[in-house]
Image 1: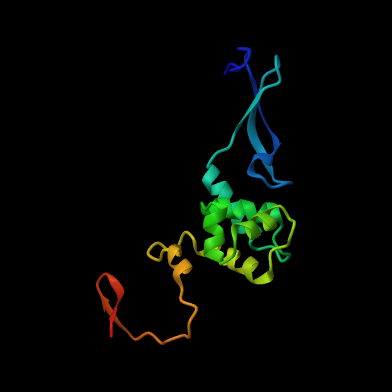
Image 2: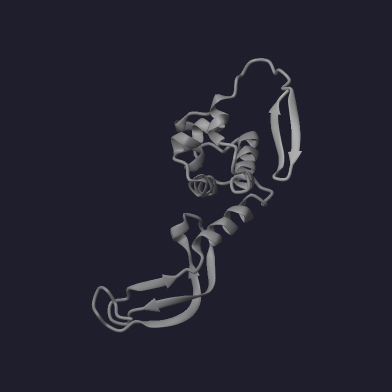
Length: 161
């Protein structure tokens, strides 16, 4: 493989690589292929299954006991695929509040921290419930919902009672 900058043949080795491009300090990829140009110093890193890597980082973050840092909040928000404004709407805060959390100007409160962790846990398995509905939850008094649940060969389904 030749360097795209200077054309010199790159040398590829397995090494530990500080993955700061993810936005989190201290994430090291152990034993990944890194191709380095001996001429100009350019390098390329081969990161296999990057989506799986980011999922593992997200699920590792939500298992820590301490509150999430600003960089961790930003990583998780981006992993969920939301803009700061979208995330703010889902959590019920202003975009400015999200900005303050992500810059560590103000720590995220315990309730919002738990909600973000729950969103990360439930994002993939839940396919038929749009998180967009969270923005429209009525703040009025709770009213019980009557449901009829029917089982057939395709599984359970809800119907109006």
